[in-house]
Length: 233
Image (cartoon, rainbow, N blue to C red):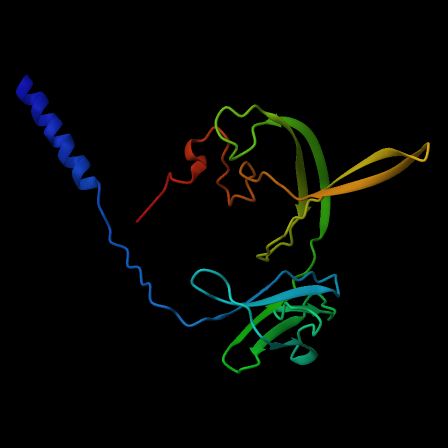
C-alpha cells in the first residue's frame, strides 16, 4: 500500500513538473527611433476638438518642436493647423471643422523637420437611433481595488438601454458626469455671505457590467479580480 501511495505521489509530482514551464521572453533594450503618436477623441457634434502629438520614448514621451496638421473631409482640405505660438505645448492642436455622419475624415500630421508623418482615416458613424431607457438605483457595494476588509459604500447604479443600429458593427462611448452642488457661507463685516460651488466626477466601477467588460463581468469577491485566471506565456 505504501508503495502504491509513493508511486501515485511521484506520478503527480512528474505531472506538476511537466505542466510548469519557463519561457524566455526576448527583451531588447536597444534604443528604438522615436515615432510620432497622434491622440484625439473627436466629438462629431462639436466644432472644438483637441488633438495631441507626441514622440515615443524609452522612459517618457517626447515633445515635438513643431508640426502641421491637415484635416480633410471627403477628400477636400478642410483646415490646416499649426501649434499655438503663445503656448509652450507645441503638440496641442484645436480642430474646428464640422463633421457629419457618413463623412470620410482623414487627418495627417507632419513634423517641421520632415522626419515624422502620422495619419488616420475614419468614417463618421451614424448616431444611435434612440436612448430607450435610463434607470438609476442606489446600492451598497465594496469599491474595487480598495483592499480586503473595506466596508461597502453607497453607489449609484445606472442602467442604460439604447437601440443599436442593425447590421452595423459600432462602438459607443458612454460619458456619465456626476455633479455635486453645495452652498456655503462666511461672515464678513457683520454680514452673512452666501455662495455656491460645484464638483464634477467621472469615476465609474465597470467590472460588473456585461457590455463594458466584453461579456466577462466580475465582482469584488472574485480572486485577483479576474486578472490572473487565464495567463498564457
